[in-house]
Amino acid sequence: MAALFLIGTTFTYWTFFYAAKSSLPINSGIIASIFTTSVLFTCLLFWIIYEESLSKTTLIGLLLILISVGLISQKDDGEFAYNHCPYSLYYALFCAVAVGWCSSCVGLTLKWAIATLEMPPLQLGFDS
Image (tube, rainbow, N blue to C red):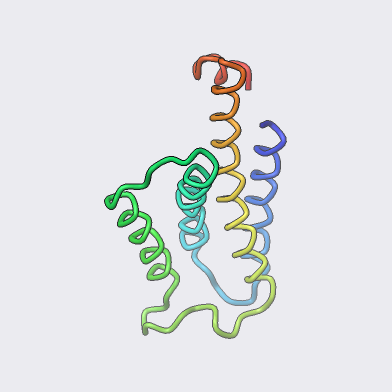
């Protein structure tokens, strides 16, 4: 679990490094909003692996998250900000999604530790 945290932190660094290196100005809030993909990844992983149920409310919430991130990444004139951008910006976006994926894997690991090792969640907070 510590390795996943380290990988996620490294991807966070690279996200903002590549965003700053890009020749196009980009708001760091846009990059940070992409981190919310961890909610989507977590729901999908738990649905696939643990057969958790997804209610209509949850699905609507996930759809709203995706729409919101898409709207945030648009310019004021309604054109997407990433049509003709340097590769460093694509690297930043990839790293931001990787941060979301790592955060989801940490949640999956915690669920596994609670179920398999029969540890109380508070104990995992102390031991991690």
